Amino acid sequence: MMKWLAVTGLLLLSASAAAIDTDQAFDDPELQARYERIIEEVRCLKCQNQSIRDSNAFLAADLRREIRRMLEEGMTDAEIYDFLVERYGEFALYRPRASGKTLILWLAPGILLIGGVVTLAVVLRRRMALPIDDDGS
Amino acid sequence: MLRYLVLIAAFVGLIVVFSIGLQRDPGELPSTYIDRQAPRVDLAGLKNPEDRLDNARLLGRQSLVNVWATWCVGCREEHPFLMALAERDVIPMYGINWRDQRSDALRWLAQYGDPYVVSGFDADGRTGIDWGVYGAPETFLIDADGTVLHKHLGPLNEAIWQRDFVPLLAEGAAAP
Image 1 (spheres, rainbow over the protein chains, first blue to last red):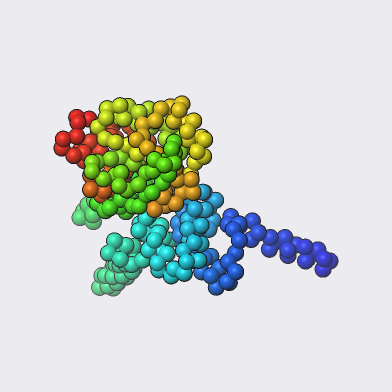
Image 2 (cartoon, chains in turn green, cyan):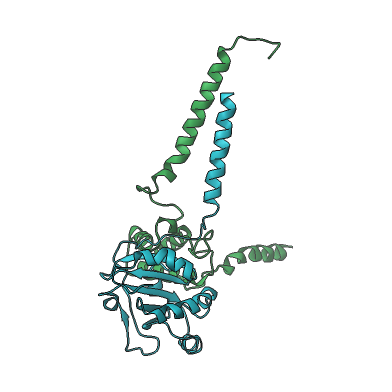
């Protein structure tokens, strides 16, 4: 029984072995962690709803290779993101940085929420001002 | 009554937004290099490695840089137009052969014709990344001083050429 449990457990774990990125891991675990975080954040431009971590398009592989090279050269995360944005625009990042062009993306949810609350308040206030009339109208 | 007008206006507004928005191809990204200096390129030539494609060649007069590959269906589609354009001799065209096999690329040029002054051989795709290329074919119009004037994503044809490129061509270029 235990044996079967163990086998099942191992099989479940093996999903991660089917990862797209089959390149060798960095020796430095910290570098590897940064690498994995960055490739999760970068959009594959060819297959736009996948990160370059999830995509097996060759462009994604090329970008992973470039990011790997930049990490090895000791570039910071910000420098790596700058490299990508310079070439592909903010769209390349799943979380575009707040800047002039992308500010609306970051502010829109808040604005919509405030607008909704204000509308709700106005409507409720108007209703409360109406005389209570059980007959309805 | 006013309330219904507001609703109708909002509905019409949405229709306008969607009818414009949904026609646009979300896959099409504007180049980040428009009005900026063209990115670095220094590639061995496809036919003759000594005959390099570098930024110096893109200076002095307007030029086209066309990113192509033999695995790219759109490139096959636009190729006859590129040949016709090259024949008109209005603007020199340079190729970046992207992520390809040299033998395949050479066979392609022998079979379908070679519209390029020279094609740089970008086997590992690094120049492609520097140029922000994400899907061949892509065609850049470079000004005489090396700034990028326009980028077209996808196969070129006469209509797109007339609409998007011709207005940007310098005075004095031969009539298109």
